[in-house]
Length: 90
Image 1: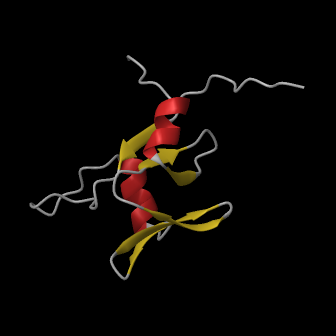
Image 2: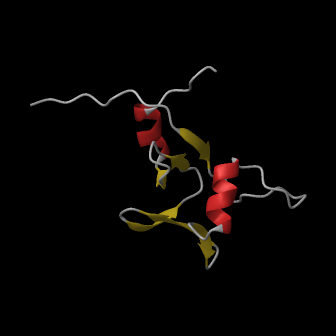
């Protein structure tokens, strides 16, 4: 059998190695700030880790951080992200 992915809208941002600007203010979506403050995303030895349904996953610079349809947060490699998602015009 073949299956097609249902069209869903997710929120995401491209991780650039930080969550805050030089001014100390967050420049990522509010849901990412909340996840960081709740320790769902945390730095360990300078690397960003995300607590996912499959366990802790390391996010690399250039990865997209996605908030899924159930509110779950996980990293996604850029090549997979670009094959799977397209920008929504609001």
